[in-house]
Image 1 (cartoon, rainbow, N blue to C red):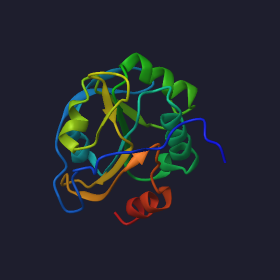
Image 2 (image 1 turned 90 degrees about the vertical axis):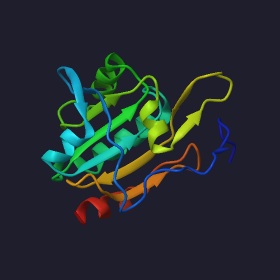
Image 3 (image 1 turned 120 degrees about the horizontal axis):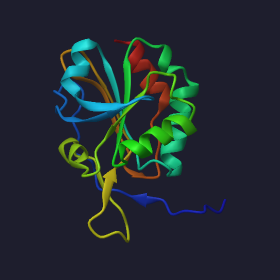
Length: 173
């Protein structure tokens, strides 16, 4: 089968793993109505969090990831589901609308500097774009103590989470 894109091998990620503390951060968190600076620790104080790093909004991997998360009913689970990418709050509002996830309670962190992905060890330098990077696809299930219960990060681009594994990790909380 002929692909319209190249599969690119990425360097091995150096991300937090199960049992480690998830790095805290504060960034604008966008929902269907507004955004406000929010910390990961503030979210975990309210309960478990599924943190989904994705490429910039509008890229097919981001579309595919959010369609799958929506279609698998993650909104009906007792966790906060939040995404994070380099896209701006304005672009996030568009993604929430276009993916029809604005009423799910899903929210998206905006991190144009990609500093959070650097802290998580999952930076993807974009080919042909000097100085531009974005997070590689990655998922983390983080409990109320901010301990990682499940971690996955792409080792090639494009790559997608094993959604069955992700669901099992959430169900095990």
